[in-house]
Length: 184
Figure 1: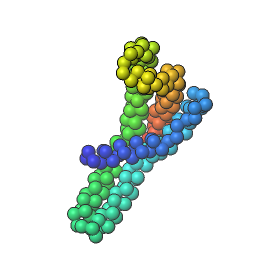
Figure 2: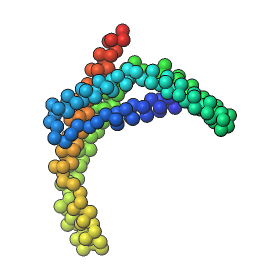
Figure 3: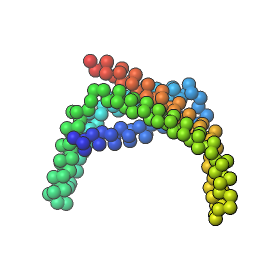
Figure 4: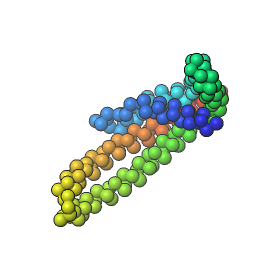
């Protein structure tokens, strides 16, 4: 069961990583529009996940036959994996879209906390520069400190991620709800 859940998680993460991020010059409205477009694709993946898992199980089953030529135990292990994936295909939760939406919302919240902590850290950089004066390797340490990106740049990058993932989470929930209604 845990292997099947792990496989489902890998499929979801891989699918979410294949969704392109918005361009830097996009404004918030454009990010929302892109999130809705990507959410439709992602919602379709979630809706079709049981079928995707069944096809994957068939493919792994075929690998089991090839594995038999290497050694019977190799084929046996592959067939066991195929069976686990097939079992997972029938146990995909109906509220998977809500779970994904919840995890994306947690990601946004964690990102906001990290942003706040980073801003506090950036405020301490001048003191850090002063504290390395006279230390062995001072020039190297100061070079490292100088290579730290500006707080404005980091803020901009974090805000861009938040402005993408927040509407994506909302759109996935809405898209998946539409697909759930259509199934009934």
